Amino acid sequence: MTTEVTHRIVETNGIRMHLAEAGSGPLVVLCHGFPESWYSWRHQLPALAEAGFHAVAPDMRGYGQTERPEAIDQYTLLHLVGDMVSLLDALGADQAVIAGHDWGAPVAWHAALLRPDRFRAVIGLSVPYRPRGILYSAAGDATPRESSVTAVGAVGMVPRKGGFLSGLEDPTNLPSWLSKADVAFYTDEFARTGFTGGLNWYRNIDRNWELLAPFAGARVMVPALYIAGDRDLVVAFPGMDKLIPNLANFVPQLRGTIMLPGCGHWTQQERAGEVNAAMIDFLRQL
Amino acid sequence: MPSEVTHRTVETNGIRMHLAEAGAGPLVVLCHGCPELWYSWRHQLPALAAAGFHAVAPDMRGYGRTDRPEAIDQYTLFHLVGDMVGLLDVLDAENAVIVGNDWGASVAWHAALMRPDRFRGVIGLSVPFRPRGQVRPTAVMPQTEDAVFYQLYYQTPGVAEAAFEHDVRRFIRGNLYSISGDMPAREARGAAALMVPRKGGLLARWATHFVKPAVLPPWVSENDVDFCANEFARTGFRGAINWYRNIDRNWELLAPYAGARITVPALYIAGDRDPVVSFPGMDRLIPNLADFVPQLRATIMLPGCGHWTQQERAAEVNAAMIDFLRRL
Image (cartoon, each protein chain N blue to C red):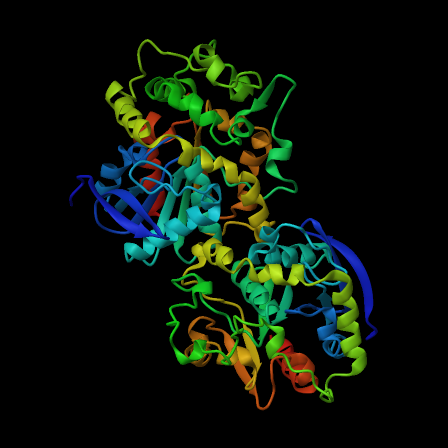
Protein backbone atom coordinates (compact mmCIF):
# COMPACT_ATOMS: atom_id res chain seq x y z
CA MET A 1 0.00 0.00 0.00
CA THR A 2 1.57 3.25 -1.10
CA THR A 3 0.82 6.37 0.91
CA GLU A 4 3.05 8.53 -1.23
CA VAL A 5 1.25 11.39 -2.97
CA THR A 6 1.55 11.26 -6.76
CA HIS A 7 0.33 13.68 -9.42
CA ARG A 8 -1.24 13.45 -12.85
CA ILE A 9 -3.42 15.34 -15.31
CA VAL A 10 -6.71 13.87 -16.56
CA GLU A 11 -9.33 15.15 -18.97
CA THR A 12 -12.70 15.70 -17.29
CA ASN A 13 -15.82 17.44 -18.55
CA GLY A 14 -13.88 19.18 -21.32
CA ILE A 15 -11.04 20.57 -19.18
CA ARG A 16 -7.65 19.25 -18.11
CA MET A 17 -7.62 18.66 -14.37
CA HIS A 18 -4.63 18.18 -12.10
CA LEU A 19 -4.96 15.50 -9.41
CA ALA A 20 -2.97 14.69 -6.31
CA GLU A 21 -3.65 11.15 -5.15
CA ALA A 22 -2.54 8.43 -2.79
CA GLY A 23 -3.43 4.85 -1.96
CA SER A 24 -5.64 2.26 -3.53
CA GLY A 25 -9.07 0.96 -2.62
CA PRO A 26 -12.53 2.55 -2.61
CA LEU A 27 -12.38 6.05 -4.11
CA VAL A 28 -12.63 9.17 -1.95
CA VAL A 29 -12.70 12.49 -3.84
CA LEU A 30 -11.61 15.60 -1.91
CA CYS A 31 -12.89 19.00 -3.14
CA HIS A 32 -11.09 22.08 -1.83
CA GLY A 33 -12.61 25.53 -1.36
CA PHE A 34 -11.66 29.19 -1.85
CA PRO A 35 -8.91 30.29 -2.18
CA GLU A 36 -7.22 26.95 -1.90
CA SER A 37 -5.60 24.06 -3.70
CA TRP A 38 -5.35 20.23 -3.65
CA TYR A 39 -2.72 21.13 -1.05
CA SER A 40 -5.42 21.82 1.56
CA TRP A 41 -5.87 18.01 1.73
CA ARG A 42 -2.15 17.27 2.23
CA HIS A 43 -2.82 15.69 5.63
CA GLN A 44 -5.78 13.64 4.44
CA LEU A 45 -4.20 12.05 1.35
CA PRO A 46 -1.66 9.85 3.23
CA ALA A 47 -4.04 9.16 6.13
CA LEU A 48 -6.83 7.92 3.84
CA ALA A 49 -4.33 5.90 1.79
CA GLU A 50 -3.02 4.32 4.98
CA ALA A 51 -6.60 3.42 5.95
CA GLY A 52 -7.10 1.55 2.65
CA PHE A 53 -8.70 4.14 0.38
CA HIS A 54 -7.81 5.71 -2.96
CA ALA A 55 -7.80 9.41 -2.04
CA VAL A 56 -7.89 11.91 -4.91
CA ALA A 57 -7.64 15.69 -4.43
CA PRO A 58 -8.00 17.69 -7.64
CA ASP A 59 -7.13 21.28 -8.19
CA MET A 60 -10.76 22.29 -8.81
CA ARG A 61 -11.86 24.13 -11.98
CA GLY A 62 -10.16 27.53 -12.11
CA TYR A 63 -7.39 26.61 -9.66
CA GLY A 64 -3.73 25.60 -9.61
CA GLN A 65 -2.63 23.35 -12.44
CA THR A 66 -6.21 22.71 -13.59
CA GLU A 67 -7.65 24.69 -16.50
CA ARG A 68 -9.31 28.06 -15.96
CA PRO A 69 -11.99 28.69 -18.60
CA GLU A 70 -12.41 32.36 -19.48
CA ALA A 71 -16.18 32.77 -19.31
CA ILE A 72 -17.79 33.33 -15.93
CA ASP A 73 -20.73 31.06 -16.80
CA GLN A 74 -18.32 28.11 -17.00
CA TYR A 75 -18.20 27.99 -13.20
CA THR A 76 -21.75 26.99 -12.24
CA LEU A 77 -22.33 24.23 -9.70
CA LEU A 78 -23.51 22.09 -12.61
CA HIS A 79 -20.11 22.49 -14.30
CA LEU A 80 -18.36 21.73 -11.01
CA VAL A 81 -20.47 18.65 -10.25
CA GLY A 82 -20.06 17.65 -13.90
CA ASP A 83 -16.29 17.75 -13.41
CA MET A 84 -16.57 15.35 -10.48
CA VAL A 85 -18.86 12.88 -12.32
CA SER A 86 -16.48 12.95 -15.24
CA LEU A 87 -13.54 12.47 -12.87
CA LEU A 88 -15.08 9.20 -11.68
CA ASP A 89 -15.38 8.15 -15.32
CA ALA A 90 -11.76 9.09 -16.00
CA LEU A 91 -10.66 7.05 -12.98
CA GLY A 92 -12.81 4.09 -14.05
CA ALA A 93 -14.72 4.25 -10.75
CA ASP A 94 -18.40 3.30 -10.58
CA GLN A 95 -18.76 5.12 -7.30
CA ALA A 96 -16.98 7.32 -4.80
CA VAL A 97 -17.43 9.02 -1.49
CA ILE A 98 -17.13 12.77 -2.01
CA ALA A 99 -15.80 15.18 0.59
CA GLY A 100 -15.65 18.94 0.29
CA HIS A 101 -14.58 21.94 2.31
CA ASP A 102 -15.84 25.54 1.96
CA TRP A 103 -17.01 25.94 -1.70
CA GLY A 104 -15.95 22.34 -2.24
CA ALA A 105 -18.67 21.32 0.23
CA PRO A 106 -21.57 22.60 -1.97
CA VAL A 107 -19.95 20.72 -4.85
CA ALA A 108 -19.89 17.57 -2.73
CA TRP A 109 -23.44 18.00 -1.37
CA HIS A 110 -24.83 18.69 -4.85
CA ALA A 111 -22.90 15.80 -6.37
CA ALA A 112 -24.61 13.56 -3.81
CA LEU A 113 -27.96 15.25 -4.51
CA LEU A 114 -27.80 14.91 -8.28
CA ARG A 115 -26.04 11.56 -8.59
CA PRO A 116 -26.68 9.36 -5.56
CA ASP A 117 -25.93 6.41 -7.87
CA ARG A 118 -22.31 7.62 -8.31
CA PHE A 119 -21.66 9.30 -4.94
CA ARG A 120 -22.53 6.75 -2.29
CA ALA A 121 -21.82 9.10 0.61
CA VAL A 122 -20.81 12.69 1.31
CA ILE A 123 -18.72 14.54 3.89
CA GLY A 124 -19.13 18.31 4.19
CA LEU A 125 -16.60 20.45 6.05
CA SER A 126 -17.43 24.01 7.14
CA VAL A 127 -20.42 24.51 4.77
CA PRO A 128 -23.56 22.43 5.44
CA TYR A 129 -26.01 21.41 2.72
CA ARG A 130 -28.20 24.43 2.13
CA PRO A 131 -31.58 23.69 0.56
CA ARG A 132 -32.45 26.08 -2.27
CA GLY A 133 -33.96 29.27 -0.81
CA ILE A 134 -36.93 31.15 -2.11
CA LEU A 135 -34.90 34.29 -2.87
CA TYR A 136 -31.71 35.04 -4.76
CA SER A 137 -28.87 34.17 -2.41
CA ALA A 138 -27.02 37.40 -3.10
CA ALA A 139 -30.03 39.23 -1.76
CA GLY A 140 -29.04 37.93 1.66
CA ASP A 141 -31.94 35.45 1.79
CA ALA A 142 -34.40 37.82 3.32
CA THR A 143 -32.08 39.18 5.97
CA PRO A 144 -33.02 42.84 6.44
CA ARG A 145 -30.17 45.17 5.47
CA GLU A 146 -30.53 47.07 8.74
CA SER A 147 -30.04 43.98 10.88
CA SER A 148 -26.99 43.70 13.13
CA VAL A 149 -25.59 40.81 11.09
CA THR A 150 -25.07 43.11 8.12
CA ALA A 151 -23.26 45.82 10.10
CA VAL A 152 -19.67 46.70 9.21
CA GLY A 153 -17.34 44.47 11.20
CA ALA A 154 -19.89 41.65 11.36
CA VAL A 155 -19.28 38.22 9.85
CA GLY A 156 -18.53 38.27 6.15
CA MET A 157 -19.02 42.00 5.69
CA VAL A 158 -16.57 43.99 3.55
CA PRO A 159 -16.41 47.74 4.20
CA ARG A 160 -17.52 49.72 1.14
CA LYS A 161 -14.58 52.03 1.77
CA GLY A 162 -11.19 50.31 1.57
CA GLY A 163 -12.47 46.93 0.44
CA PHE A 164 -11.33 43.50 1.59
CA LEU A 165 -7.68 44.11 2.41
CA SER A 166 -8.43 46.82 4.96
CA GLY A 167 -9.88 44.19 7.28
CA LEU A 168 -7.18 41.53 6.84
CA GLU A 169 -4.68 40.83 9.62
CA ASP A 170 -0.98 40.26 8.92
CA PRO A 171 0.10 37.92 11.76
CA THR A 172 3.64 38.01 13.12
CA ASN A 173 3.56 34.31 14.00
CA LEU A 174 1.73 31.58 12.09
CA PRO A 175 -0.39 29.13 14.08
CA SER A 176 1.11 25.68 14.67
CA TRP A 177 -0.99 24.00 11.94
CA LEU A 178 0.39 26.28 9.21
CA SER A 179 4.05 26.59 8.20
CA LYS A 180 5.87 29.22 6.18
CA ALA A 181 6.37 26.54 3.53
CA ASP A 182 2.59 25.99 3.37
CA VAL A 183 2.01 29.70 2.86
CA ALA A 184 4.73 29.73 0.22
CA PHE A 185 3.03 26.88 -1.68
CA TYR A 186 -0.32 28.72 -1.88
CA THR A 187 1.38 32.02 -2.66
CA ASP A 188 3.35 30.56 -5.56
CA GLU A 189 0.26 28.89 -7.03
CA PHE A 190 -1.95 31.99 -6.86
CA ALA A 191 0.86 34.30 -7.96
CA ARG A 192 0.98 32.21 -11.14
CA THR A 193 -2.78 31.69 -11.71
CA GLY A 194 -4.39 34.75 -10.20
CA PHE A 195 -7.73 34.55 -8.37
CA THR A 196 -10.20 35.06 -11.20
CA GLY A 197 -11.03 31.35 -11.55
CA GLY A 198 -11.75 30.98 -7.86
CA LEU A 199 -13.73 34.22 -7.68
CA ASN A 200 -15.80 33.19 -10.70
CA TRP A 201 -17.47 30.53 -8.53
CA TYR A 202 -19.05 33.36 -6.51
CA ARG A 203 -20.16 35.09 -9.70
CA ASN A 204 -22.50 32.17 -10.36
CA ILE A 205 -24.34 32.27 -7.05
CA ASP A 206 -27.54 33.70 -8.57
CA ARG A 207 -27.18 31.62 -11.73
CA ASN A 208 -26.82 28.50 -9.57
CA TRP A 209 -29.94 29.43 -7.68
CA GLU A 210 -31.83 29.75 -10.96
CA LEU A 211 -30.50 26.52 -12.42
CA LEU A 212 -31.22 24.59 -9.25
CA ALA A 213 -34.97 25.28 -9.49
CA PRO A 214 -35.62 21.60 -10.26
CA PHE A 215 -34.15 20.75 -6.87
CA ALA A 216 -36.39 22.98 -4.76
CA GLY A 217 -37.20 21.00 -1.62
CA ALA A 218 -34.90 18.11 -2.61
CA ARG A 219 -33.06 16.18 0.09
CA VAL A 220 -29.60 14.58 0.02
CA MET A 221 -30.39 10.89 0.43
CA VAL A 222 -26.99 9.19 0.83
CA PRO A 223 -25.17 8.74 4.17
CA ALA A 224 -23.55 11.99 5.23
CA LEU A 225 -21.23 13.57 7.77
CA TYR A 226 -20.89 17.26 8.62
CA ILE A 227 -17.84 18.68 10.41
CA ALA A 228 -17.17 22.32 11.26
CA GLY A 229 -15.22 24.44 13.68
CA ASP A 230 -17.29 26.35 16.21
CA ARG A 231 -15.14 29.41 15.47
CA ASP A 232 -15.60 29.07 11.70
CA LEU A 233 -17.14 32.30 10.36
CA VAL A 234 -19.36 30.17 8.09
CA VAL A 235 -21.32 28.74 11.02
CA ALA A 236 -22.13 32.32 12.07
CA PHE A 237 -23.58 33.20 8.63
CA PRO A 238 -27.22 34.36 8.74
CA GLY A 239 -29.57 31.40 9.05
CA MET A 240 -26.91 28.85 10.01
CA ASP A 241 -28.09 28.84 13.63
CA LYS A 242 -31.38 27.44 12.38
CA LEU A 243 -30.00 25.25 9.57
CA ILE A 244 -27.17 23.36 11.29
CA PRO A 245 -29.24 21.92 14.21
CA ASN A 246 -31.90 20.84 11.67
CA LEU A 247 -29.59 19.53 8.96
CA ALA A 248 -31.03 16.02 9.23
CA ASN A 249 -34.35 17.39 7.90
CA PHE A 250 -32.60 17.95 4.56
CA VAL A 251 -30.04 15.15 4.86
CA PRO A 252 -32.02 12.33 6.47
CA GLN A 253 -29.07 9.92 6.53
CA LEU A 254 -26.83 12.40 8.35
CA ARG A 255 -24.68 10.14 10.56
CA GLY A 256 -23.21 12.93 12.62
CA THR A 257 -22.59 16.64 13.05
CA ILE A 258 -19.20 17.24 14.62
CA MET A 259 -18.51 20.76 15.91
CA LEU A 260 -14.81 21.11 16.72
CA PRO A 261 -14.29 23.47 19.67
CA GLY A 262 -11.85 26.29 18.96
CA CYS A 263 -11.48 25.33 15.30
CA GLY A 264 -11.93 27.98 12.63
CA HIS A 265 -12.60 27.86 8.90
CA TRP A 266 -9.70 25.64 7.72
CA THR A 267 -11.20 22.52 9.24
CA GLN A 268 -9.04 19.75 7.77
CA GLN A 269 -5.85 21.80 8.05
CA GLU A 270 -6.43 23.12 11.57
CA ARG A 271 -7.50 19.76 13.00
CA ALA A 272 -5.98 17.18 10.67
CA GLY A 273 -5.86 14.40 13.28
CA GLU A 274 -9.49 14.74 14.40
CA VAL A 275 -10.85 15.26 10.87
CA ASN A 276 -8.91 12.24 9.56
CA ALA A 277 -10.23 10.06 12.39
CA ALA A 278 -13.82 11.19 11.85
CA MET A 279 -13.61 10.72 8.08
CA ILE A 280 -12.07 7.25 8.34
CA ASP A 281 -14.59 6.18 10.97
CA PHE A 282 -17.47 7.35 8.72
CA LEU A 283 -15.95 5.69 5.63
CA ARG A 284 -15.47 2.36 7.42
CA GLN A 285 -19.06 2.26 8.63
CA LEU A 286 -20.55 2.79 5.16
CA MET B 1 -66.45 13.61 -11.73
CA PRO B 2 -66.14 16.84 -13.72
CA SER B 3 -64.43 16.34 -17.08
CA GLU B 4 -64.98 19.98 -18.06
CA VAL B 5 -61.76 21.88 -18.83
CA THR B 6 -61.17 24.91 -16.60
CA HIS B 7 -58.44 27.54 -16.69
CA ARG B 8 -56.35 29.44 -14.18
CA THR B 9 -53.02 31.21 -13.82
CA VAL B 10 -50.53 30.22 -11.14
CA GLU B 11 -47.08 31.46 -10.10
CA THR B 12 -44.29 28.91 -10.61
CA ASN B 13 -40.51 29.30 -10.57
CA GLY B 14 -40.81 33.06 -10.82
CA ILE B 15 -43.19 33.23 -13.80
CA ARG B 16 -46.95 33.33 -14.22
CA MET B 17 -48.16 30.14 -15.88
CA HIS B 18 -51.52 29.47 -17.52
CA LEU B 19 -53.03 26.05 -16.89
CA ALA B 20 -55.86 24.13 -18.48
CA GLU B 21 -57.07 21.34 -16.24
CA ALA B 22 -59.78 18.77 -15.70
CA GLY B 23 -60.75 16.12 -13.18
CA ALA B 24 -59.69 15.17 -9.68
CA GLY B 25 -57.39 12.44 -8.45
CA PRO B 26 -53.69 11.62 -8.91
CA LEU B 27 -51.95 14.41 -10.80
CA VAL B 28 -50.91 14.01 -14.45
CA VAL B 29 -48.96 16.95 -15.96
CA LEU B 30 -49.03 17.32 -19.76
CA CYS B 31 -46.14 19.22 -21.42
CA HIS B 32 -46.65 20.35 -25.01
CA GLY B 33 -43.93 20.87 -27.62
CA CYS B 34 -43.00 23.37 -30.34
CA PRO B 35 -44.87 25.22 -31.73
CA GLU B 36 -47.85 24.20 -29.64
CA LEU B 37 -50.02 25.09 -26.65
CA TRP B 38 -51.99 23.46 -23.82
CA TYR B 39 -54.52 22.99 -26.63
CA SER B 40 -52.52 20.06 -28.04
CA TRP B 41 -53.85 18.05 -25.05
CA ARG B 42 -57.52 18.98 -25.63
CA HIS B 43 -58.43 15.32 -26.21
CA GLN B 44 -56.45 14.02 -23.21
CA LEU B 45 -57.78 16.42 -20.55
CA PRO B 46 -61.39 15.10 -20.50
CA ALA B 47 -60.33 11.48 -21.09
CA LEU B 48 -57.88 11.48 -18.16
CA ALA B 49 -60.45 13.28 -15.98
CA ALA B 50 -63.07 10.64 -16.82
CA ALA B 51 -60.53 7.95 -15.91
CA GLY B 52 -60.10 9.43 -12.42
CA PHE B 53 -57.06 11.67 -12.77
CA HIS B 54 -56.35 15.36 -12.28
CA ALA B 55 -54.98 16.31 -15.70
CA VAL B 56 -53.13 19.63 -15.98
CA ALA B 57 -51.82 21.05 -19.27
CA PRO B 58 -49.86 24.29 -18.91
CA ASP B 59 -48.90 26.72 -21.60
CA MET B 60 -45.20 26.05 -21.20
CA ARG B 61 -42.66 28.86 -20.53
CA GLY B 62 -42.61 31.21 -23.52
CA TYR B 63 -46.00 30.12 -24.86
CA GLY B 64 -49.61 31.24 -24.95
CA ARG B 65 -50.86 32.93 -21.82
CA THR B 66 -47.77 31.99 -19.78
CA ASP B 67 -44.94 34.52 -19.21
CA ARG B 68 -42.21 34.85 -21.84
CA PRO B 69 -38.95 35.98 -20.19
CA GLU B 70 -36.78 38.12 -22.48
CA ALA B 71 -33.38 36.51 -22.04
CA ILE B 72 -32.53 33.41 -24.06
CA ASP B 73 -30.78 31.79 -21.09
CA GLN B 74 -34.11 31.69 -19.22
CA TYR B 75 -35.20 28.73 -21.35
CA THR B 76 -32.77 25.97 -20.28
CA LEU B 77 -34.06 22.50 -19.41
CA PHE B 78 -33.30 23.42 -15.78
CA HIS B 79 -35.72 26.35 -15.98
CA LEU B 80 -38.32 24.18 -17.71
CA VAL B 81 -38.03 21.30 -15.25
CA GLY B 82 -37.94 23.88 -12.45
CA ASP B 83 -41.27 25.21 -13.73
CA MET B 84 -42.78 21.73 -13.44
CA VAL B 85 -41.44 21.13 -9.92
CA GLY B 86 -42.78 24.55 -8.95
CA LEU B 87 -46.11 23.61 -10.52
CA LEU B 88 -46.40 20.53 -8.30
CA ASP B 89 -45.70 22.75 -5.28
CA VAL B 90 -48.40 25.22 -6.33
CA LEU B 91 -50.88 22.40 -6.87
CA ASP B 92 -49.85 20.99 -3.48
CA ALA B 93 -49.07 17.64 -5.09
CA GLU B 94 -46.31 15.54 -3.57
CA ASN B 95 -45.85 13.73 -6.83
CA ALA B 96 -47.19 13.44 -10.36
CA VAL B 97 -46.89 11.47 -13.54
CA ILE B 98 -45.38 13.70 -16.22
CA VAL B 99 -46.16 13.42 -19.92
CA GLY B 100 -44.64 15.31 -22.81
CA ASN B 101 -44.72 15.51 -26.59
CA ASP B 102 -41.87 16.81 -28.76
CA TRP B 103 -39.81 19.31 -26.66
CA GLY B 104 -42.26 18.66 -23.83
CA ALA B 105 -41.03 15.05 -23.84
CA SER B 106 -37.49 16.22 -23.13
CA VAL B 107 -38.84 18.24 -20.20
CA ALA B 108 -40.77 15.20 -18.95
CA TRP B 109 -37.83 12.78 -19.25
CA HIS B 110 -35.48 15.20 -17.48
CA ALA B 111 -38.03 15.93 -14.76
CA ALA B 112 -38.14 12.18 -14.09
CA LEU B 113 -34.34 12.01 -14.24
CA MET B 114 -33.75 14.89 -11.83
CA ARG B 115 -36.63 14.38 -9.41
CA PRO B 116 -37.72 10.73 -9.29
CA ASP B 117 -39.11 11.56 -5.83
CA ARG B 118 -41.62 13.99 -7.38
CA PHE B 119 -42.28 12.40 -10.78
CA ARG B 120 -43.34 8.81 -10.16
CA GLY B 121 -43.83 7.93 -13.80
CA VAL B 122 -43.09 9.42 -17.22
CA ILE B 123 -44.68 9.15 -20.66
CA GLY B 124 -42.75 10.44 -23.67
CA LEU B 125 -44.48 11.06 -27.00
CA SER B 126 -42.46 11.45 -30.20
CA VAL B 127 -39.09 12.22 -28.55
CA PRO B 128 -37.41 9.40 -26.57
CA PHE B 129 -35.05 10.00 -23.65
CA ARG B 130 -31.70 10.84 -25.17
CA PRO B 131 -28.72 10.20 -22.91
CA ARG B 132 -26.21 13.06 -22.91
CA GLY B 133 -23.78 12.71 -25.82
CA GLN B 134 -20.01 13.08 -25.84
CA VAL B 135 -19.99 16.28 -27.88
CA ARG B 136 -21.80 19.61 -28.12
CA PRO B 137 -25.06 18.81 -29.98
CA THR B 138 -24.95 21.58 -32.60
CA ALA B 139 -21.46 20.37 -33.61
CA VAL B 140 -22.92 17.14 -35.01
CA MET B 141 -26.19 18.38 -36.52
CA PRO B 142 -26.52 17.72 -40.26
CA GLN B 143 -25.35 20.47 -42.60
CA THR B 144 -24.37 20.63 -46.24
CA GLU B 145 -23.02 23.33 -48.49
CA ASP B 146 -26.57 24.40 -49.34
CA ALA B 147 -28.62 23.65 -46.25
CA VAL B 148 -28.57 23.27 -42.46
CA PHE B 149 -30.60 21.18 -40.00
CA TYR B 150 -33.62 23.23 -38.91
CA GLN B 151 -32.36 23.36 -35.30
CA LEU B 152 -29.21 25.13 -36.53
CA TYR B 153 -31.36 27.51 -38.56
CA TYR B 154 -33.25 28.34 -35.35
CA GLN B 155 -30.08 29.44 -33.49
CA THR B 156 -29.85 33.04 -34.74
CA PRO B 157 -32.36 35.21 -32.85
CA GLY B 158 -35.02 36.75 -35.06
CA VAL B 159 -34.46 34.73 -38.24
CA ALA B 160 -36.91 31.85 -37.76
CA GLU B 161 -39.30 34.20 -35.96
CA ALA B 162 -39.51 36.38 -39.08
CA ALA B 163 -40.27 33.36 -41.26
CA PHE B 164 -42.99 31.95 -38.99
CA GLU B 165 -44.54 35.33 -38.23
CA HIS B 166 -44.67 36.22 -41.94
CA ASP B 167 -47.99 34.38 -42.16
CA VAL B 168 -48.78 32.77 -38.82
CA ARG B 169 -51.92 30.94 -39.86
CA ARG B 170 -50.40 29.49 -42.99
CA PHE B 171 -47.30 28.39 -41.06
CA ILE B 172 -49.35 26.69 -38.33
CA ARG B 173 -51.64 25.00 -40.85
CA GLY B 174 -48.85 23.92 -43.18
CA ASN B 175 -46.66 22.70 -40.33
CA LEU B 176 -49.46 20.64 -38.77
CA TYR B 177 -50.01 18.94 -42.10
CA SER B 178 -46.41 18.63 -43.29
CA ILE B 179 -45.11 16.44 -40.47
CA SER B 180 -48.32 14.54 -39.81
CA GLY B 181 -48.99 10.99 -40.93
CA ASP B 182 -51.45 12.37 -43.46
CA MET B 183 -48.78 13.98 -45.60
CA PRO B 184 -48.81 11.74 -48.69
CA ALA B 185 -45.57 9.78 -49.01
CA ARG B 186 -44.99 11.14 -52.54
CA GLU B 187 -45.01 14.71 -51.15
CA ALA B 188 -43.02 13.96 -48.02
CA ARG B 189 -39.33 14.66 -48.39
CA GLY B 190 -38.27 12.63 -45.34
CA ALA B 191 -35.12 13.91 -43.67
CA ALA B 192 -34.72 16.53 -46.42
CA ALA B 193 -37.80 18.30 -45.04
CA LEU B 194 -35.79 19.06 -41.90
CA MET B 195 -33.05 20.85 -43.81
CA VAL B 196 -33.31 24.61 -44.34
CA PRO B 197 -31.54 26.26 -47.30
CA ARG B 198 -28.70 28.54 -46.24
CA LYS B 199 -29.69 31.10 -48.87
CA GLY B 200 -32.80 33.00 -47.88
CA GLY B 201 -33.75 30.51 -45.16
CA LEU B 202 -37.40 29.58 -44.71
CA LEU B 203 -38.68 33.05 -45.55
CA ALA B 204 -37.52 32.68 -49.18
CA ARG B 205 -38.91 29.14 -49.52
CA TRP B 206 -42.39 29.58 -48.15
CA ALA B 207 -44.24 28.14 -51.08
CA THR B 208 -42.23 24.94 -51.34
CA HIS B 209 -41.31 24.31 -47.71
CA PHE B 210 -44.77 24.45 -46.17
CA VAL B 211 -47.31 22.42 -48.03
CA LYS B 212 -50.68 24.14 -48.29
CA PRO B 213 -53.23 21.37 -47.93
CA ALA B 214 -56.55 21.90 -49.71
CA VAL B 215 -58.37 20.02 -46.97
CA LEU B 216 -57.17 19.32 -43.42
CA PRO B 217 -57.00 15.71 -42.17
CA PRO B 218 -59.91 14.59 -39.95
CA TRP B 219 -57.96 14.93 -36.65
CA VAL B 220 -57.52 18.69 -36.98
CA SER B 221 -60.10 21.35 -37.88
CA GLU B 222 -59.85 24.88 -39.27
CA ASN B 223 -61.09 25.96 -35.82
CA ASP B 224 -58.12 24.21 -34.20
CA VAL B 225 -55.79 26.03 -36.59
CA ASP B 226 -57.54 29.31 -35.74
CA PHE B 227 -57.02 28.77 -32.02
CA CYS B 228 -53.28 28.19 -32.38
CA ALA B 229 -52.81 30.87 -35.04
CA ASN B 230 -54.54 33.47 -32.87
CA GLU B 231 -52.34 32.63 -29.88
CA PHE B 232 -49.09 32.79 -31.85
CA ALA B 233 -50.18 35.90 -33.74
CA ARG B 234 -50.42 37.53 -30.32
CA THR B 235 -47.26 36.09 -28.70
CA GLY B 236 -44.90 35.54 -31.62
CA PHE B 237 -42.54 32.56 -31.73
CA ARG B 238 -39.52 33.94 -29.90
CA GLY B 239 -40.27 32.21 -26.59
CA ALA B 240 -40.82 28.90 -28.35
CA ILE B 241 -37.68 29.08 -30.45
CA ASN B 242 -35.58 30.16 -27.48
CA TRP B 243 -35.83 26.56 -26.25
CA TYR B 244 -33.68 25.52 -29.24
CA ARG B 245 -31.16 28.26 -28.47
CA ASN B 246 -30.30 26.46 -25.25
CA ILE B 247 -29.45 23.10 -26.81
CA ASP B 248 -25.70 23.52 -26.33
CA ARG B 249 -26.12 25.22 -22.95
CA ASN B 250 -28.33 22.32 -21.83
CA TRP B 251 -25.66 19.87 -22.91
CA GLU B 252 -23.08 21.73 -20.84
CA LEU B 253 -25.30 22.04 -17.78
CA LEU B 254 -26.30 18.37 -17.95
CA ALA B 255 -22.68 17.23 -17.43
CA PRO B 256 -23.59 15.91 -13.95
CA TYR B 257 -26.04 13.53 -15.66
CA ALA B 258 -23.56 11.91 -18.06
CA GLY B 259 -24.47 8.22 -18.16
CA ALA B 260 -27.49 8.68 -15.87
CA ARG B 261 -30.55 6.50 -16.32
CA ILE B 262 -34.23 7.24 -15.71
CA THR B 263 -35.32 4.93 -12.95
CA VAL B 264 -39.09 5.53 -12.70
CA PRO B 265 -41.66 3.56 -14.74
CA ALA B 266 -41.92 4.89 -18.28
CA LEU B 267 -43.84 4.61 -21.53
CA TYR B 268 -42.74 5.75 -24.99
CA ILE B 269 -45.23 6.31 -27.84
CA ALA B 270 -44.43 7.59 -31.32
CA GLY B 271 -45.78 7.53 -34.85
CA ASP B 272 -43.76 5.53 -37.34
CA ARG B 273 -44.11 8.44 -39.80
CA ASP B 274 -42.92 11.03 -37.26
CA PRO B 275 -39.78 12.71 -38.69
CA VAL B 276 -38.31 12.62 -35.15
CA VAL B 277 -37.98 8.83 -35.25
CA SER B 278 -35.79 9.17 -38.34
CA PHE B 279 -33.44 11.78 -36.80
CA PRO B 280 -29.78 10.69 -36.90
CA GLY B 281 -29.12 8.00 -34.27
CA MET B 282 -32.79 7.26 -33.47
CA ASP B 283 -32.64 3.91 -35.31
CA ARG B 284 -30.16 2.73 -32.68
CA LEU B 285 -31.60 4.60 -29.67
CA ILE B 286 -35.28 3.65 -29.87
CA PRO B 287 -34.81 -0.16 -29.94
CA ASN B 288 -32.38 0.13 -27.01
CA LEU B 289 -34.29 2.69 -24.96
CA ALA B 290 -34.62 0.27 -22.02
CA ASP B 291 -30.83 0.44 -21.55
CA PHE B 292 -31.29 4.06 -20.46
CA VAL B 293 -34.81 3.74 -19.05
CA PRO B 294 -34.70 0.37 -17.29
CA GLN B 295 -38.32 0.55 -16.11
CA LEU B 296 -39.60 1.23 -19.64
CA ARG B 297 -42.90 -0.65 -19.65
CA ALA B 298 -43.48 -0.42 -23.40
CA THR B 299 -42.55 1.27 -26.66
CA ILE B 300 -45.64 1.78 -28.82
CA MET B 301 -45.05 2.67 -32.48
CA LEU B 302 -48.31 3.84 -34.09
CA PRO B 303 -48.43 2.83 -37.78
CA GLY B 304 -49.17 5.73 -40.13
CA CYS B 305 -49.04 8.32 -37.35
CA GLY B 306 -46.87 11.44 -37.75
CA HIS B 307 -45.43 13.95 -35.28
CA TRP B 308 -48.62 15.15 -33.57
CA THR B 309 -49.04 11.89 -31.68
CA GLN B 310 -51.78 12.72 -29.18
CA GLN B 311 -53.71 14.85 -31.66
CA GLU B 312 -53.50 12.46 -34.61
CA ARG B 313 -54.35 9.36 -32.56
CA ALA B 314 -56.21 10.71 -29.56
CA ALA B 315 -58.09 7.50 -28.73
CA GLU B 316 -55.11 5.15 -28.99
CA VAL B 317 -52.86 7.52 -27.03
CA ASN B 318 -55.55 8.01 -24.35
CA ALA B 319 -56.02 4.26 -23.96
CA ALA B 320 -52.27 3.60 -23.73
CA MET B 321 -51.77 6.43 -21.23
CA ILE B 322 -54.67 5.36 -19.01
CA ASP B 323 -53.56 1.72 -19.09
CA PHE B 324 -50.03 2.77 -18.05
CA LEU B 325 -51.35 5.11 -15.34
CA ARG B 326 -53.64 2.46 -13.84
CA ARG B 327 -50.79 -0.06 -13.51
CA LEU B 328 -48.46 2.29 -11.66
